[in-house]
Image 1 (cartoon, one colour):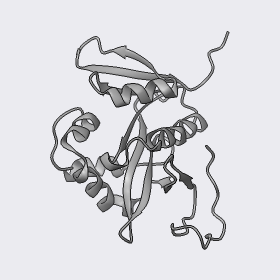
Image 2 (image 1 turned 90 degrees about the vertical axis):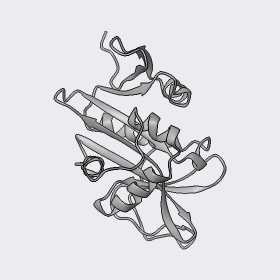
Image 3 (image 1 turned 30 degrees about the vertical axis):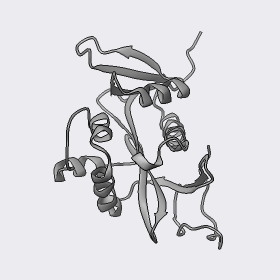
Length: 193
């Protein structure tokens, strides 16, 4: 997938004009969604998105039980810089408002060659191809920003993530210190001979 630089908004597009990097994509069922970088004014949308997730989806996303996103957690989730910490939000129209229906992100640690990623799709928006689309955008950005490896730490029982990771070419390995966790890793640069 490639991002489109916005031109004049199309009269047929249900989405407002957004400056900067963004894409309007059509999912498997024909529904259009806007994918763009997360912005500070998305904070309330992000909080509402997490609140609407099923308990199981929140557990898979945060590797444990949470009922509500705390203010410190929201601060962390909203803290992106476009290079070392990136997040893309998927927005769709719902009763006249733009609703967050998915999000993906990566963040690097002290090892600037690797970034940890996560993707979450609203329970009522699964199985439409949104997670794949979000991850393709995220992978392309990580490559563009010079990362060599992208990885995620997931619950071993999370079959949806296992299938998504396999489809995208990630390799799965057990966590040596915790049998309930696995790591999915993707080489972003070709191996040198």
